Amino acid sequence: MSRDRQLDRRTVVTGLAAAGALAAMPKPLHALGEYAAPQGQPSQKLRIACIGVGGMGHSDVRGVSSENLVAFADVDWRSAERAFREFPNAKRYRDFREMLEKERNNIDAVTVSTPDHTHAVAAMMALKMGKHVYCQKPLARTIGEVRALQAEAARRPRQITQMGNQGHAQEGIRLIREWVEAGVIGEVSKIDYWTNRPIWPQARNRSSEMHNVPPTFDWNLWLGPAQERPWHPSYAPFNWRGWWDFGTGAMGDMACHIMDAAYWVLGLKYPARVIPESTQLYAEMAPAQERITYEFPAIGSRRAVELVWRDGGLLPPKPTDWPADLDFPHSATGGQIWHGTKGMILAGTYSENPRLVNDQQWKDLQANPVPQKYPRTGGVYQEWIEAIKGGTQPGSNFASYAAPMTEMILLGCLATRMGQTLELNPDTGAITNVQAPSEWVMPTYRAGWSL
Image (cartoon, rainbow, N blue to C red):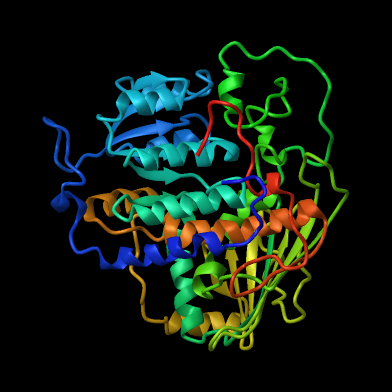
């Protein structure tokens, strides 16, 4: 991809069309010879390599531990110590590129649980090697990287992909969709979101202090495709999310969870407008607080809808008909309120524990529940594993779902970073009023790193 590529989606239209072929897959992958268990192992076991096994990576390791964990790669062996101890038979690497090259014939699938700036290069390498891929959210750090992963996954419909927005595989999101489609709250016109993130430092300039790199930590490998800079504890191992070179701020971290239900339930595509408001902007870091409004036009029978994102402790206004005995905002850590013409739905960050706000409506719904329409799953990890073995794509696969949803979210990050409203063609997704800096759309990688 060229660095001067403009911010539009024409280049991925064919990829999206190819993703439609997923539904036509006639046989499970093992029947097509795409998956074969290693000799001497139970036929149901996948051979999995894990990129990033500390922190959230450890949770992902445990999530797929029903399978054969063949190899681990992590740049910080102190952080990885627990996973190493729990799975002593897994081979250990620092550089995931070395692991994938050496283990390419010994693995069927790969998990990616690194900081955002390494998602794309790791997931792409695994895809091009013909492996099934599970990647943590957001799918990538920039819109250009997301598009590249989407197009590659669309070319490989028999490789099973899944993004780690776990709420998409849970009960709550299905209940919300069943209620909305049954007309329980009427037509949805607006959804309010809030989160207590960031819980890491944001809104500051780069420090000029010098620090020694921890002895167990490979800073050069951690930087990966990002441009070189000296190590500082404000970057790693934890505080990277607020830096635009490494992360996507509070919105990129949490919106893949909180806005997931709306994207799926309402069939959202491209907004017509993204309006950012924030505290002071910094060149390299996300702001301390932001409110981002997405305006989606009416499509078919769905009316126009507005999504309003708030982070940094900002809360939505309390509705005038909020019940006196129901806490507001119900959860200080985050949540969502769906406003319909007949009522409101309240749910948590992961769409968990949804309920109707009006007490009488809630009692009536509990007494006369909406018939179950959408099948339930065993959770995000089990869904991915079963999809590999059954030859069907899971709900948050890269090509048809995770990539376009992530791109919608990254438009909010881009609007905030630019400090101005983005006007879009809602049919194509092209930004019509301004051209974004090319480096913010598709970054230039360091030597040795590529898609």
